[in-house]
Amino acid sequence: MTFRLLWTRKPVGLWAPVSLAALLFSGCESHPPPRPWNPDSPATFLKRVMASDAQDEDRFGSTVDIDGDLVVVGTNNMFAHDYRPGKAFIYSRNEGGADAWGEVLRLAASDGEDVDLFGYAVSADGDKAIIGAGAEDNIDIDVGAAYMYSRNEGGTDTWGQMKKMIPSDGQSGDGFGYTVSLDGDTALIGAPLRSETAWASGAAYLFARDQGGTDNWGEVKKILPAGLPEAAGYGYAVAVNGSKAVVGAMLEDGAGENRGAAYIFYRDSGGPGNWGEVKKLTAFDAEDRDQYGISVCIFEDLLIIGAGWKHEAGVEMGAAYIYSRNAGGPDNWGLVKKLSASDGAFGDGFGFSVSLSADHAIIGAPGKGGEIMGLGAVYVFQRDLGGLDNWGEAGKIVPVDANETCWFGYSTAISGDRFAVGAPFKRGGQAHGGAVYLFRLRS
Image (cartoon, rainbow, N blue to C red):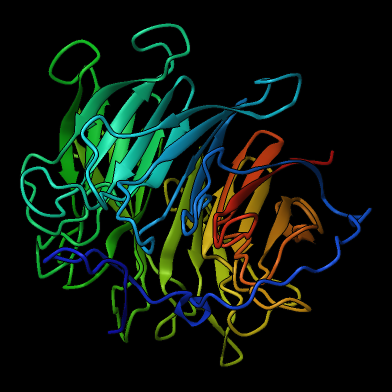
């Protein structure tokens, strides 16, 4: 197996699998002329946001989430030279004026230390946000942590910290908080480096509000599939929605190497309050190093799973798979459609990020090139486009002002008719300061 080393400044390292490593270089800054907006685009461009205190190598937009009028953005500054603890930002639609999408607050951990990777994962729901810090040192080195914030904690619109969450059995190098997902009173947190059933097999933890006391976010359960192999990457992608949770294991070998898998869990499966495994999913056309499960998103009875290095005609282009809960039978989670880019090419990373609503899927392809190397793109797919329950490609979106190695599409999130796209290598006044672009879907 091959891995991309993400962290080398501590004795125990936090890593992630090779996915876009071929694009990881600084390059020379280019200044292309602005591109005219495509009148046939499936979305309207709303706003580009950048950090108010942007610094070199912040890689703002490495993670993003949107819920209603709220946007939360995280950074990935592990390559910065000043050993920052990390940061995250909250934006509101009407902050600074109608539809201004202004910055409300910069979040920082109450006990932040150098290179905690605070902001490496973010998720938002309603008036709460959870921020992951996968290299935070609490019980031991790089165990990791996640921080829960509430809009009115400590005062109106103050976004105060409610709870710092750590695993009950944390071990050095677990990477707890490397991925996070929040829905209502439930938080799902990945620890993809935890040695559980085997070396670095991974784990995921569920926390719930009022567990252990009013407004306390306490650990409910560690969820694991049976027989998880070593270095599976289980927990590298997580998503929770209502009583359902899904965890990606993008490096699980299966019948080959790094083919990937994803696991679905239900609340109350196996007993009241238990979260039991109900289904293991793998790609019907799995090949070595596809990395199926590199990204996951669940929305009600729909599920999308990305395979950022899926081989198509022998070329690593990427793909995504949409499943429906009752396709092929009650609770079957059958495949509805495999999605591919109409203009797919080697190294696109299509499926590296995915997000899903009732009628739309947003697929990131941060390695997409063309006239500008590493520009990136996102693809919008629409339900019933091209036939009943078909998911047809509605269009491709690229940023109008991006430079090379922008990685537009590295992160995506959708809420209603609005969606957000991260471009962590976007250059402004900084080298790789990063940006997030906001769009509204056209009706």
